[in-house]
Image (cartoon, rainbow, N blue to C red):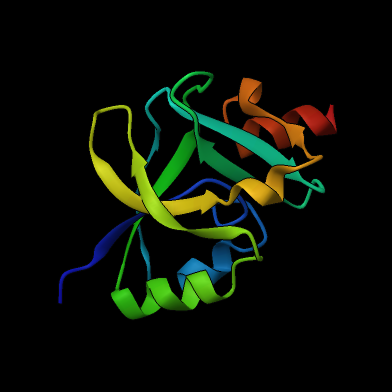
Length: 128
């Protein structure tokens, strides 16, 4: 069975609380990379990020690529908070992969963190 390449940009990444969800489903880590320069990111209550595509004001956002089965992908998505969903993410090399994207309503009133380049960098900044 072919595995699906899946981009994660927040709490599913290495070193964060929900990474175990990927590991428990036998997902295989591939590489850390970035999106093309068409994405913005918000911190949702400082608990998790939401990334949306914006060709006008976007930047490159750090993501991790994982390979997992379609059943594992569904299991992961069912555990995501409301307002996060599956969509196509364009990487800096032009490849399109499936990934976690935010719905516009979830960012209302939240802090934009695009300038940090990703969830990991934002969390490092918060700890300083």
